[in-house]
Image (cartoon, rainbow, N blue to C red):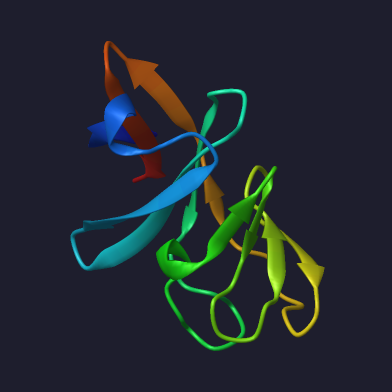
Length: 105
């Protein structure tokens, strides 16, 4: 079963940007694409555990701020070395002006 968590408002994230969201000891990165879609992944890079909210968003990729590895934030797929392990991604939905992320129980 999926539990939907209220993460932020749609106004908290600029287009083509990312913010950090922490919940119950876990950290996430929430993205807003250039076409105003919202996505969520684990917050830490799979290479060196650096928070991706400090990274650079370009189109549909997030670049890690430490070693410039890249992920497709829509799917979590690792795109460029040194990252080789995908990020876990989470479903998102909009409820009014709130961005909700889905976590499995």
